[in-house]
Amino acid sequence: MLEESFRWYGPEDPVSLSFIRQTGATAVYNALHDIPYGQPWPAEAIRARRQLIEKAGLRWNVVESVPVHEDIKLAQGNYRTYLDHYATTLRALAREGVTTVIYNFMPVLDWVRTDLQFVLPDGSECLRFDPVHFAAFELFALRRAGAEAEYTAEQVKAAQLFWESMGAAARDAFTAGIIDSFPGTKMGLTLDRLRATLAQYHGFSRDDLKANLAGFLRHVTPVAEEVGVRLAIHPDDPPFSILGLPRVVSTETDLNDILRMHEGSANGLCFCTGSLGVRPDNDLPAMIRRFADRIHAVHLRAVAREPGGVFYEADHLAGVVDMPAVIHELIKEQVRRQRAGRTDWRLPFRPDHGHTMLDDLAKPRPANPGYSCLGRMRGLAELRGVICGLMACDRLG
Image (cartoon, rainbow, N blue to C red; front, side, top):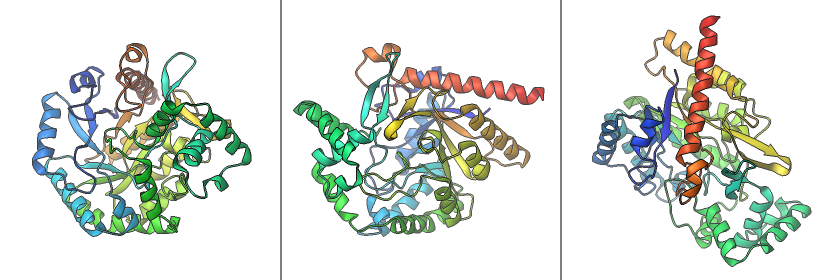
């Protein structure tokens, strides 16, 4: 079986470790979210977190994530110090036996949605991205110079109508949902701070970002290999440019380029079917077949696409992701690893995001959007069923 996991945001997470254990998951993806970006993680804090998780009968199998400081992405300021701090953190994690580390290389903002409580026909709520609504944010809240040229006249008009339909309080809530909704970390980002950070990327190209990612890997991957850590880069979410910024982890070609930056197995992937599934040109089962031996962690979720570039989080077995085909490729890779005698043969996965549903709808909305308990538990149960069914079919020939 693939290793069933759940994301946990630490002691303040309303979804407790005891609740997670009741879902049937045996491990958690976790991070020390209270450590400021760029600072090394103290060994004693890592040890205390691992012991807390193990006391609950679970295993800390994946770090999600050790954030990459913005100076590293820009290769400016104190980036060399932050690279050294990153390496120090990898060593400290390895000493505690936590050896799979997810990171991303998205400039300025990590994942972005325009609606954190989109109501589906069945009454449950999900995360949604609408390019017209994002245009309203760019044009009328952020007022980013040059943004209008990136949208059609129809989109600009629709964005203005959407913006004008909201009152002041609704506009503030909408803006906050975009710039400060990243789960686990609330940085209190303001529009002025966002503008200042964007200004640092003026004239910054896609090639620049790729070169700086390569520089990051040159520095930290040898350390990861030395201490037995597997690095897993998360795809861009969404997998296309936003805010006029380059993104370099969105397509099969992007992933291939990254893996070629350092050929060692420590340089690997977090394969997120939701992020990659937004693009119709990404063939997910084929990508798993191509990169299978470098996949170190898995996020399983599905998305539904609508006209105009709109997408939202679908049920885990719905939407455009062929989940049985994806899972079958992962099972086959796990079997290959077992036969090859690999110690890391078991692939960890977690149900990524989940609908707010049932009793969770009566509770305050989750501080970590997309991470209410019941929707993810439903997803885990559905994915477990697919895994068991496929494994049974394989045994029957």
